[in-house]
Amino acid sequence: MALIPFDDRDGLIWWDGEMVPWRDAKLHVLSHGLHYASGVFEGERAYAGNIFMLRQHSERLIQSGRILGFEIPWTAEEIDAACQQVIAANGLVDAYIRPIAWRGSEQLSVSAQQTKVHLAIACWAWPNLFGNDRMKGVRLGIAEWKRPSPETAPTASKAAGLYMIGTLAKHRAEAEGWDDALMYDWRGQVAEGTGANICFVFDGEVHTPTPEGFLDSITRRAVTALAHKHQIKVVERAILPDELARATEAFLVGTAAEVTPVRQIGPNHYTPGQITNTLLTEYDRLVRMSPAEVAKIAA
Ligand code: PMP
Image 1 (cartoon, rainbow, N blue to C red):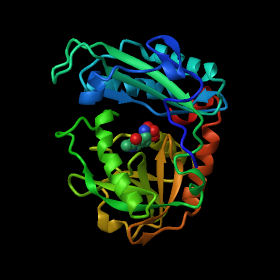
Image 2: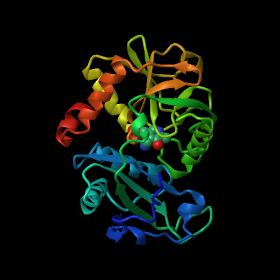
Image 3: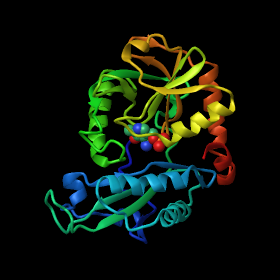
């Protein structure tokens, strides 16, 4: 399939309060965000015109910036409104939304105290991270790269710089024929995928690694609420690699991945069963509810 480059598409991008024609949304090459990865972003999805868990994403974006030492000059309410404006301006109701904030060009050195902070929001149609493979389940290779300790990197932030580890791990996995990589953390505990958290089923319960050293997924929290609604116990705990063989089901959770069954991790095979199927179906239903209904179930 021919790739349509992201800088050569029709549409509008919200940029510092203005709607800019897609192809004109260009950044100077001497931007601090590019050289020093002083950028934070979000990935959101709109279903039938409603952006799922919008406020949680806008608040996490602001918090991600604060963790990197900068303040995004827009409130969560303003960011929510801008996200809604941009999908409407592009005539989309089912969309992936990508807000990104970064330090500008006023200074180009490690110290960047005088830089202005910018915010842009783009959106496009993006069915699922794994496309048609999602329902049959994905295969994960085990990455050599590790999620870093929170003392080594600002791991609670959805910081652009942290994604270099994910890209390296994913490229290696793809080169070896896997769909994605499962990453361990600096202690050797199971962490997450390269762009999604992971859950396992042990003895009829959902077990998921405690988010230390990786992003605390908004989707995972929503799926946890759905599990509780269905009397499925969810346990957040340290999961060790030698436990992977004992799990009976596994699935990825994330905005882009939604609930994606996993059918293999390294030598371990899984068959999506009742728990994966229930949570996948319930999640697909939840995201299409009104924000008020979502708030009742998952907030
Ligand atoms: N981990 C990583 C590394 C991610 O990029 C994402 C996607 N934002 C997630 C987890 C899932 O987070 P969320 O459910 O909040 O989208």
